[in-house]
Image 1 (tube, helix red, strand yellow):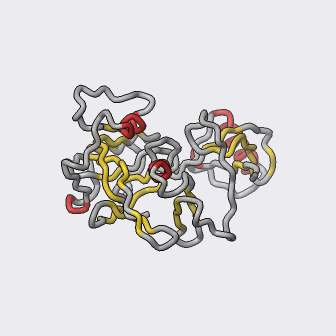
Image 2 (cartoon, rainbow, N blue to C red):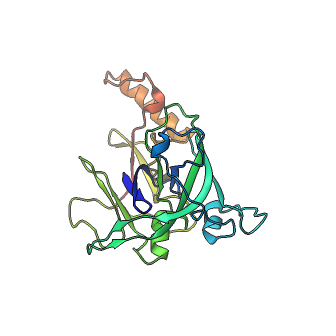
Image 3 (cartoon, helix red, strand yellow):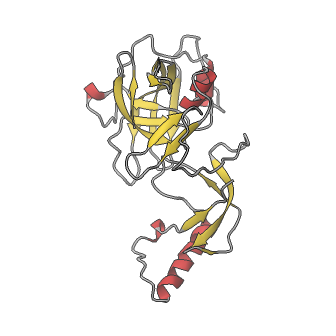
Length: 264
């Protein structure tokens, strides 16, 4: 999605990621490993940087608090992803213009990452986006920051429509129809969004595997299965093929079946 940052706002196209907390953009500090042209990068000013002792710095680096040598030291961050990619940089504050339901324009100052050292070690080339919109559950996420400022409630909706889809923050804008909701667990022990234990189905039929803990991560390209579940699915695929059903096993690691979770 495209979001404006700064005053006047500069547009940045970000990947929506419910599996990570911190929002970050490629930053001219200068940058190593960035995929955008220099004129497309975020350009921070010296007044934008967050101090190491700031509470938001503690939230970003939780559960390992930063080791601050002096109070004016910049707040650093590092994010590592499941595909072994990573980003390193500083935490900054800037304006995020948001149009509210009542038509007014809110301009909250939000903390996000100024990523100036990127590494891509995954199997796929880096995406052409400018960074990540982190919508995880910690206090460092954009939705949590908006809630703490009283701009919106700590609620967001991510609609995956047939066409473009949309994202909304707060409970004021909730479509009355055309959406199916799945309740998320509210326990603080769950770091990620989860609907609770699920049952694994294959071709709509039970596999005997129940109680699978599933998390929703919009930033992940693949579905990841533990060894027991994966082997069960692989065996079912082989049985499916031996029965004369048309199913390709050219890349079995990508054959993932269906996970079913009850709606509440």
